Image (cartoon, rainbow, N blue to C red):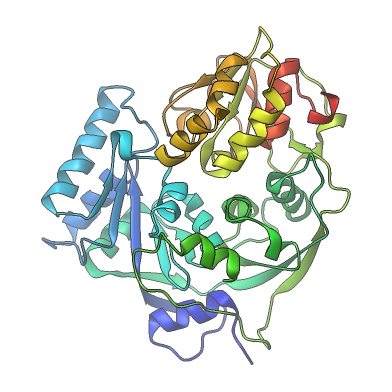
Length: 419
């Protein structure tokens, strides 16, 4: 009886020949990550172990991305603590200021997320890096602190849900629509502590950007992680990026899966998730058409270059509604620079949008676009729970970049087909 991708990667890192779901293992970590919110807690936990040095300064990454630039004195102290620790430990990879970006997009771009590796991050959307074939999981800050000392993290081996992606995306549909359809099907706990393993003819045609979107939102269904196998798209993406040697891992032909679901993209139009649930999904053109106050395009879900290009294509020659704030945050400095060179950011600004620094920004309701009482937003991020982006009476719709851009122009929840 063979093993799934997750089981094979965990077995290799735990020194085991075979692993089955439910077993508890201590596994060697290839990369540890924390950000300006979670790193200070992890640093305290590291110091509590009594260790003086991290297990490997090349494999601990600290990134200031949630409240960058520092939004107030409290967050400035958080970042200072993180940077002081990084300097004292002589960490190779520390990102702040103009070198920082959204962690889950920045690490793959920097060639630090590699196939067959275990990446543990003190942030739930670490699963994004499963697009590269890594076993990438979000863990607690205390776990990261202990792992910085030992180089090891413990896990319960998850069972695996096989997700078959078939059909083709239409002109107005995107990977975000695939992700929302997946959440509509699975609900908040349909993949509870499962690993989502993506397969099928459409999976093989998805770009790395599209794969990252799906792996990112796997955790919204309760999954431990989402992971793609290695193919030519993976190899091409990593060809000039990979910082370390890597080896592809594939599931065994006789691997045993918890279950299999099939998502057919044929006929799948632009979707939207209504407040206050990522699982309350409906066609964007059949939504409430509620008037909106803000649109946010960015985040670890949809802040990549392809996303900005799609938004700019909708905005070209049009103006943002006078009632709407359009906030666009490229996910990394490299994405920002390329979007600038291509005229993508110029199109957004000419339409009346605001372009800000690579940052998580308003995604978590902490910075660069907090919603006031009663305000309504369309966001390309991954969560729209009560109070997620600001006041508890605010309301957030989740959508892909084309729906978000169309909504910004029309001043209400809208589909790009309407333009």
